[in-house]
Length: 97
Image (cartoon, rainbow, N blue to C red; front, side):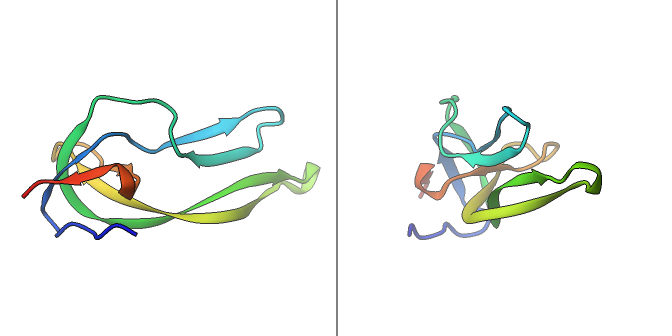
C-alpha cells in the first residue's frame, strides 16, 4: 500500500474513479479501475474513503437490495474550492514536495 500524503499537500492524479454500470438488467454498479484516461488532475489531498463494489439484486415486487462484493480505498482530491472532491485510486497519485 502506498503512503498517504499529508492533509493539504498538493498532488497530481493521472486518472479518476468513475462509477460504471453494465446494463443487461441494470443491476451491476462498481468502481472501475480504468474507464478512460483524463488529463492529469492537480489538487489538494483532503482525505480518504472506503467504498464498496457490488451489485443490486432485483426482487420483483419486494424491491431491490445491495449486495457488496468488496471494498476499495479512494483518496479525495479537491481541484477547486467550489467543486466536489474527486475520488482517485492511490496508485494513480504522485505527491509534490
